[in-house]
Amino acid sequence: MIEARHAKVTSTDKTTNLDVPVTGDLTLDEMEAVLLDSAIELGLYFSRITVLGTKQYPGNRHWHLKQGPGQRGCLDVTYWPAGPLMWISMRNYEPAWVHAYGSRLGSELKRRFA
Image 1: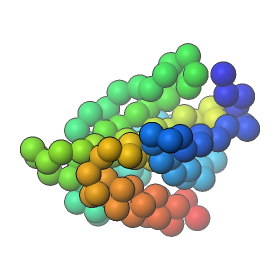
Image 2 (image 1 turned 135 degrees about the vertical axis):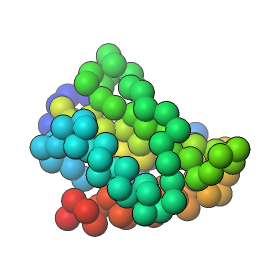
Image 3 (image 1 turned 120 degrees about the vertical axis):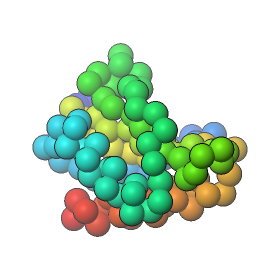
Image 4 (image 1 turned 45 degrees about the horizontal axis):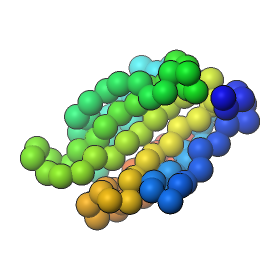
């Protein structure tokens, strides 16, 4: 289990994870609003809202973002206020747009939280 206040998600050989510095002060709904605004600015939309690993990240929220209907690929974003931790995940097999937009979304979120 990841210890709160010292959390960090690292990349693996299958997935690149980008950390987004957060304080944990935002509720799940507040963070979702910020993420939605950022996604809309980039032309992305939420295709699914769920949770990720409730044992390891209790109380988290996980979003799947898409670029367009019928387009392959999915950008994953997870927020865990208890960490506090937010990260963007891009699996290596995903199409190029996922990696490009993952970096752009990470920069936009970092700008908003600066």
